Image 1 (tube, rainbow, N blue to C red):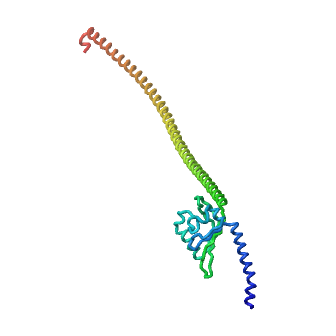
Image 2: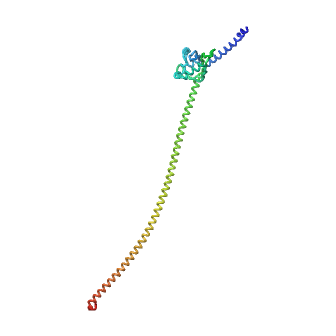
Image 3: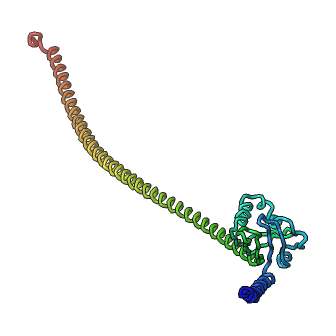
Length: 269
């Protein structure tokens, strides 16, 4: 009697709980895309939100595998197979996923894959709750593209600035090198000017010495000329004297001859 009363008393509570659960499921069904899979990924059923988002009728997808919603190349990867192995083991998964519609269009969903366990603790099915976030994802992708483009532009600007800086550094180095060359050339030119100045001084000294030597030579020449003139005069005088002596001797001889002619021989003897 007591157990019967307890059972009868618990019926309203159970009914209320079931009603609450049904209400929650109805709310989720209205607001989200819902699809159920077997533990290996075979499609059991899906609500209108999911079918509308992917462009299918329920009859087109029942009994097919989840891979019809993903990129064929991804469906062949070890990562995709591991995804379903984790769900089959009861591991919950959530995130943003790219999916392919019936018409081949890419959409993005924010979803959770929820393993459901039976009374034995085994996974009986996997229920997926999803929200279409394609517009949001497109905006994010476009923003990322703009950011990447801006980074590229900034990188190009930085490279141009670095290139200009390197060119300026190179030009500065060349200017410094040219300045050093000019300074070295100026030093060499100054040294050459000093050598030329020294040579000119030496040449001037030699010219002065030559002038002195010329003056001395002129003086000696004048003295030699004077001595020559004096000697010439003396020679003339000597010649005149000698000539006079000879003339006197001849005259005397003539006179003597005349005496010899006139006087007797004994007198000349």
